[in-house]
Length: 121
Image (cartoon, rainbow, N blue to C red; front, side, top):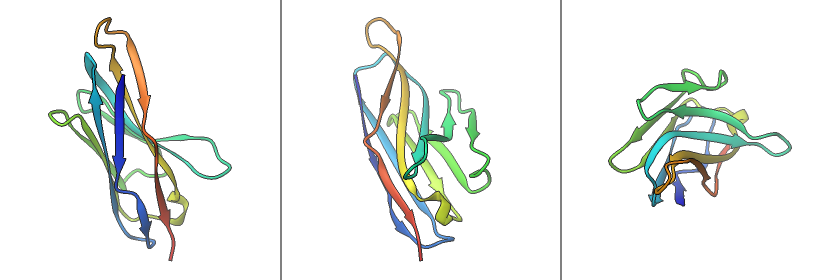
């Protein structure tokens, strides 16, 4: 099982920036894709950004050009740099990690506990 610890959320004014971090620990064969999702009140959870083990990325159209996902494989950590934040970015942000089981290698997935991002003046 992989445990995820997220940090970096908070309150920021429109146009501001925040950087989220998510560190993975535990036993696993290999970490594959790492991603960030968000869920606003009354809405479904949606993909924000995802990065593969090879460094390929994809983003939700609503954040392209403003958010950047990156990872540090040595630290098993994924980051989300969020710039030019808008009120509609307000949501709980969740880290997700896809990895291979440490014995079988079977694909597994873990979620972080979530970190709140509030964009408001």
